[in-house]
Image (cartoon, rainbow, N blue to C red; front, side, top):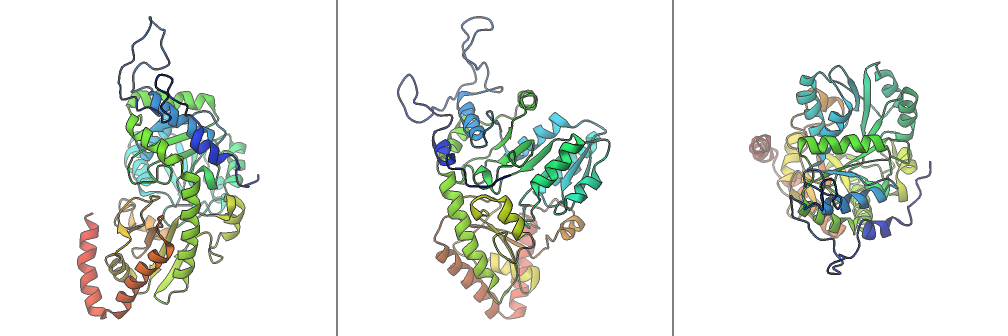
Length: 411
C-alpha cells in the first residue's frame, strides 16, 4: 500500500464539512449551542433532535475528519478516552478478549485493567513490534486488536499492514490509535485497519484549547453502533469544542509538517549531546524500526514527539525538566507550545512499574513534544538545561532531584 503524500488533503482540512451559513453567509461554521431542535411534525425534522445524539457543529467536524481518510463522517466524543471506551463498549462483552500493543497511552492501560477487567473483558498486552506476537496472542474469544503506532512514549512502531492481514485472516477488527501521526502522515484504513482512533485534543486541534476524541471507520454498521453507544452514555463532544477543533484542523497539514521537521532537527542534536544516553525518534537512522517508518509514514515525516534519557538516570532527568525555561512541563502533547513530560510519574503513572520497565519506559525517560517555536530556540533551552546539569555538583543535583521526584509523584 502506497504511503505517498495525499495531494488534496490540505484542501479537505480547510473546506470539508464546511459551507457558508445559509441564513447569514458567515464563512465559519456556526456554533449551534442548543440542546433542543423544534420538529415540523412527529418524525419530521432537519436531522437533529437532541444534542446528546447529534449536533450541527459536531457533525461538521465529523464530516471533515472522515474526509481526511476518504471515509464516511467520523464519530466525535468528549475525549480520546471516551472514544476508546465507546469502542470497547461497542465491540466487547463479558468473556471477550482484546489484544493490545504493549506500548500505549497509560489511560488505555488503566481503562482496560481497572474497568473492563471488572466487566469480564480480558486483555493481553504484547510486543507488537513483531506481528507474529499478535498472531500468537489471538484466542477463540478475541474480538478486537488494538494498536498504537507510534506508541506513547517510546515511539515503538507496528507494521500495520502486516497486522491487518492477520486480523483479516482471523476475522477480527483492527483499531489503530493514530493520534501521533494524524491522517496527514499515516492513514491506517488504507493500510488495512478497520478503525482509526484519535485524541483530537492533540495535533488535530493543536492549540491546548480543547478535549476531544474521534473514531473513523468505513464500516457502516460499526458507525451506527458507535453512535448508539455515544447517545446512550452521553459522551458526545460539545459544540464549542468541535468549533475550536474545526479551526485547528485548517492548519493541521502545515503544523504537523513543521512539528516533524523541527523534531528531527532536535532529535539529531540530542543524539550528539554528550549528556544524552538514548534518543528515541523514528526519523533517526539509529531507531530500530527506521526502515518501517520510512515505508509506513507519509512524506518521510514522523511527527513531533522525541523521547530521550540523560546520564545520571531519573535524578538527572528531573533536574533537566526543572531547568528548562522555554519548554513547559505539562502532560499534553501535539500543541503549538513545546511541552516536556515525565511519563513515569505523569501520563503513565497508572501503568504498573513492571509493565513500564518491560517496554523500556524507564523512570528517567523524558518525552518532548516539539512545538512550533524556532527549533534553534528549543535547542538553546535544552542546551542550557543540560549544561546546568553537567555543571551541578552531584550532591546538589541529587538533593534537588529528590525533592522534585516527590512533587512529580503527586502531580
